[in-house]
Image (cartoon, rainbow, N blue to C red; front, side, top):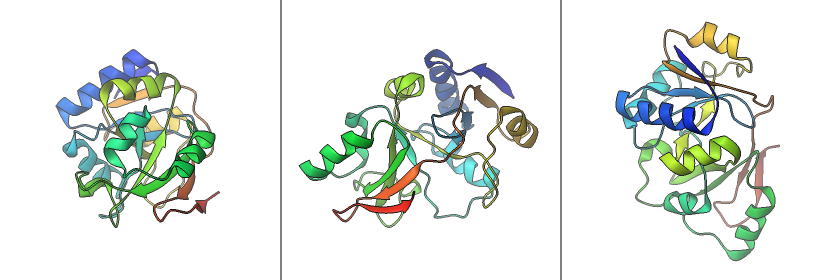
Length: 187
C-alpha cells in the first residue's frame, strides 16, 4: 500500500493513479475515512464492491468540489432548496437528489444520487479531478474503521493507495430532497 499525507497534490496524484490503474483510494475526509475513486474509473468503483463485500445495487455516495460538479450529476432543485443547501454545505451532509439520466447506474439507486460537497484540500483536489465516490472504509455491514493503522491492517492487500490525514469520527448526515421536501434519513 502506498501512503501519502493528505494534501491537494497527493490527492490529485492518487485519484489520477486510480483512474489509470483501476484501483480505489482510501482517504481521510471531514467525516470519516472513505474508500472511493473518480467516477470516470468504473473499474475501480466496481472493485470497491468486491473489497467491501458490498451488495450489488447499493449505490455509493459521491463527493463533489463545487456546485458546478453537482449539477452535472443531479437534476436542478428549486431556489428554496438551493438556498437550504448553502446552509449545510460544504460539510457533513450527504444529500439525495434526482439523478440526471446521463449518470451511470452504478452511482444511482431508483434514479437518485447521494452527493456531498466538501471543501479544504479534498474539495480542491476533487474540483481538479472530477467527482469521486466515497463510502465508509469497512466490510459491508461492519463498523467503519476510523484509524489509519486499523485501515492498513485490514485492507493493505486489497487497496494500493491511502491518503493519511486527520479525519472525523462521525459519518455524514443523510438527507433526501429528491421529492422536493427535506426528509432526514440519518441524523
